[in-house]
Length: 189
Image (tube, rainbow, N blue to C red; front, top):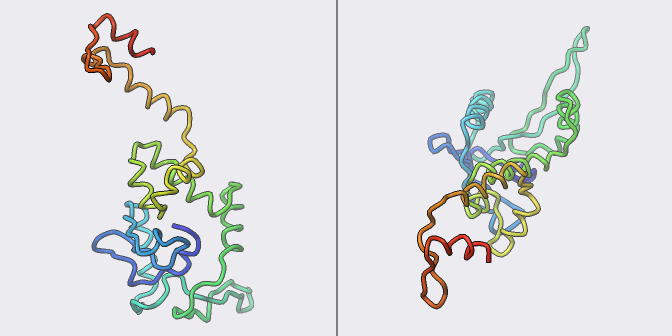
């Protein structure tokens, strides 16, 4: 999901029974209202997060606005002033801290690109990835090139499908068929 789609996510868009999230407002018309299945890890994290909000209501935000500070003699960090009717404003500071702790140097949006690449490299059909990503039909190929950084390993796997020795007769546009010995010549033309 895009940053804004996640930030504005409400509990009524999370389908725990169907293990999916329904996107609300989106950058594109093809992005709005699309269902995104949750993998096992995402489902587990969303379930854990929901448990932190036992009194949650359907129209409340999954990631609510909150204030952070420190209290007591030990100056213990704490969260207060959580308002589930207002979405979190910005998590740039939290993202930067998490990124630094993990020792990675990427932008939040790079996670979206990585997800796209991994789905495509695993063999997910481009049309399926396009619906998950919220791409319009007219931009699917362009966006897959931008987002799907397909590596050499995936390209090698793709051409392995051409290793078969018996492709059957080669049929030309005029309807003529080549013999087995002519197949190799026909394939190289």
